[in-house]
Amino acid sequence: MEAPIKIQTLADLAPNLPLQQVLSGLIEKGIKGGIEEGNNIIFETVWFPEITQRQRLVLTKKVNRLEKATLIIDLQQVGEHETLRELYGRIQAMLSRTFGSAVTREKGVFGPNIAAELRNGNFIGTSDWSTPTGILRLGIPYRLDGIVRIEIQHAESFPLSTHVNWGLEEVK
Image 1 (spheres, rainbow, N blue to C red):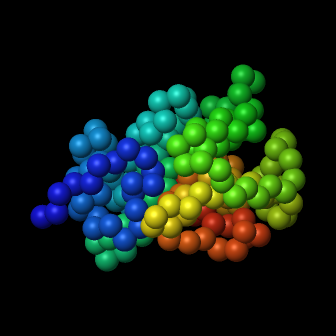
Image 2: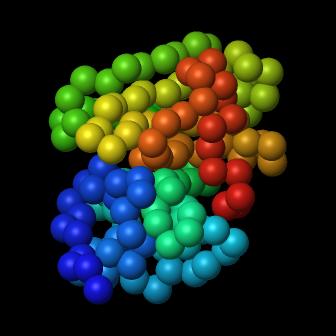
């Protein structure tokens, strides 16, 4: 059995790592008890202690290897004190402190109709950081179910920057 990896950032959850090595590294970080749903293992966890919204780490596997890692930040608890834009900006700043400057694509404005704007292709909000094994993407992807949430994914690659449906659709 391979030694667990040391996991400090989402970039350490590198695409194509052996899944068992990733799971061992998460246990050492105190993250365990994931629930399998299809090709995904979902962990209810607090990745960013400074974020009070619900966070879920999702490992997508492909033949006993990590295909991608996704941190989902649900927005049901975003209220008067912190707008979606403020929360997104705060997460973007935290990631920039760790990974440096990002390639950012923005179209449209954060507002009360963001679900419709995403559906119509009138809103794009992504920031990409290159990692040694792929791309770390922060964004608000379009979802078929209309749920608006923030996702941070580490994957080998993503669809063209104009595509808004890059999110993890399988996890509600």
